[in-house]
Length: 309
Image (tube, rainbow, N blue to C red; front, side, top):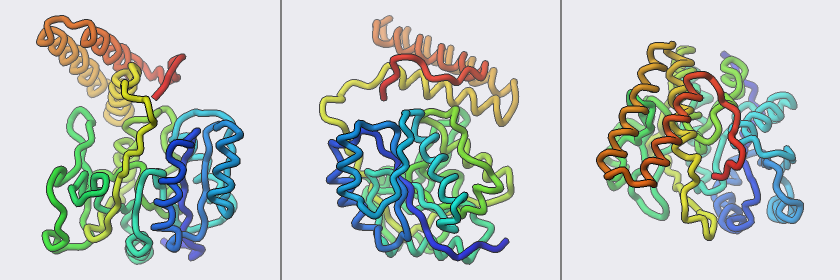
């Protein structure tokens, strides 16, 4: 498999991120020298914020999508734009709250150029402003929940004798993939709003016979820049998590696996309600989880009204 040598495009998704645009700009400075272009896919932000984006990133390609259909849709639109216009041979998806050094981006890019059996590569993800590991690659359990390898441990490069290792999954907001893989694999599943897109993508990659890899000597920091005043978790979070996980189970492994996920969600939700002494908060959480799992099993993946995340 040959790859056009036309460079690396970084794709970032935005939506009224005024509260973190300075930090986003600072993060970009760390990796900008490694990328040939920056594509910003905006999910229908207000005009004032879009003008600020243009002032901070004057050389970027800004795709104004005009509507918020989630980060997966936005990433897909930007990926398709890059491929259609032959702007790069490789694409890096990166959250605007991720910080990674240019030399580490280039390391991973060169790995993909040399080893065509690797469909996706990513760095070691560290917690905000620390050397504490979030994940040296990721795996998902039988309920499709993602967990980082070595999570919580102190990072030490000397502990990893092999620079490039295989892993089960990689973070959705920090990975590098050749355009040729997207052409073969297709775009990300836009039904998966917010959660489990990494799990779905990793399953599809492995089914095609490709590998996912981690460069254990490349580091990225997930800075988690939270919106001021948003201290309460959206009630739709448990709905979306269990909906998406049940959907993935049935999509990839059939009705039996989907039924298992639905049953697990119902029983585990009710168990937590009983243990909590029937607290109203846990009852509401159980209702959202069960409703989500039912929708995922049925393949009903439209977004609920009043959704905020």
